[in-house]
Amino acid sequence: MTGQPFPVEAGHIMMFARAIGDEHPAYQGESALAPPTFTMASAHYDPDYHLRPKGDQEWFGSGGGPGVMAEGGGGLHAEQHFEYHRPVRAGETLYAHTVPGRSWEKQGRSGRLLFSERVTEYRDADGQPVVSSVTVAVVPEGPATPKDAR
Amino acid sequence: MSLSSSDIKVGETRESVLVEDLKRTRIVQYAGASGDFNPLHTDERFAVEAAGYPGVFAHGMLTMGMTGRVLTDWVGPESLLRYGVRFKAQVWPGDTLTATATVEAVEDTPDGPVARFSLRTVNQDGVEVVTGTATARLDP
Image (tube, rainbow over all chains, first blue to last red; front, side, top):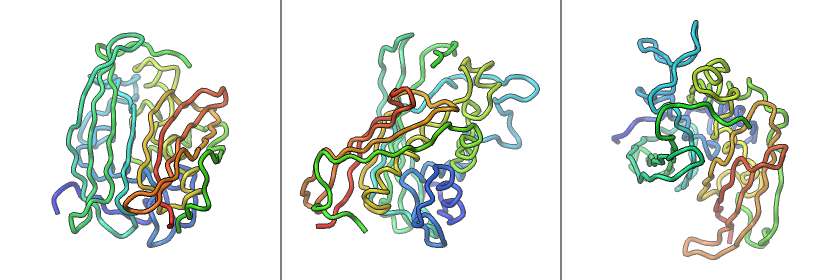
């Protein structure tokens, strides 16, 4: 199989299920099922994932200073959609293929908003589709500005 | 195990408190498990001074992950066919979130019966933070 390998591990499912506060017995043990949003955690296996500090690269969060908002770093998650072709279980390896999807613009309260989709197909070792994921990100046009309080 | 189509009726709802007084450590826990270490969610100084937010806020995917439980506790952890959300407002430390799932339709499809749900997660002020839809397989 081609694509980014994502080994689905029981311990990883346990940690993820705890993090979302769901200790359903189905998410426990060596043949645990994965919770519905678990495939997002394939980010751990993406060598180039930009939201993980890497030893040999500058990280944009605070240290001695407050950190630096990256170019386009004002991006937020606007929508997330999953289609499930079959359940995901610990012990298998999925292969993630990500391609850009549609992109569009909308006028927001304080300027133009740029939306873009990222489409990821998770397939199994036989090439069969397992989970299809569509992530919609939104980035405000222009430099980062102070954000609305709640 | 899935629900049978006779076990579920259009208009039925389930409500669940997902979290009370969300703690920052909980957001850190999700960052570690998911691999999304965006400092907007875990680094108060960065969020305020570099990004201009009032403070850190939760990953949208933490709210989506927690919201999923209202579905899987109802239809079972193996029955979802689709699950999608929009992130409508930020979730801040201290928030209390309540999710509601409503059965919008029970239909026969070529692959068997399904239930279609609408989803809504609100904070302690009644503000929608997530809205969405889901489809689950039912036993014939």
